[in-house]
Length: 169
Image (cartoon, rainbow, N blue to C red):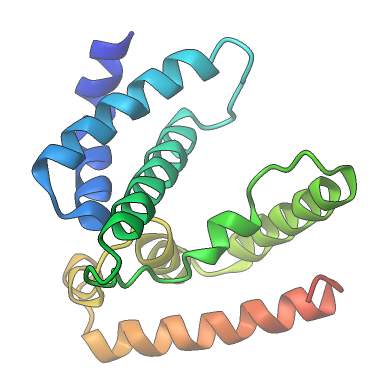
């Protein structure tokens, strides 16, 4: 199962983790940690989208590793992680009230993404979830960098308005 998972999803995990850590050895270790975490989590967990579950685990483990590495160095280079708090907002919690609020926020965020035009939704996911650069997104979608930046700016504003209307901000 692990070999099949690595064959099918290894490339996306490697790209995502390497964008965060920028170190081949740490990337390789984090991929191994991701596969172990998935192996241990899947029997009780039943994710709707295995790919999304895998990417989420990989990203969180990479961000944790980066945080630990920077804590040790204190003064290492700052990684520009776009909306890095968004996954934290959607994270599970032991506190019942906080967990309920996070579920509501997660549901609202899914509805918001679902309401966006396909290209805008893909640009948001590419930037804030898969952490692609503006240049990479522009190239992938065949649009200018300024169009990507403007789309992201307008969509972030719409997200803020949407969350305020929902009473979540």
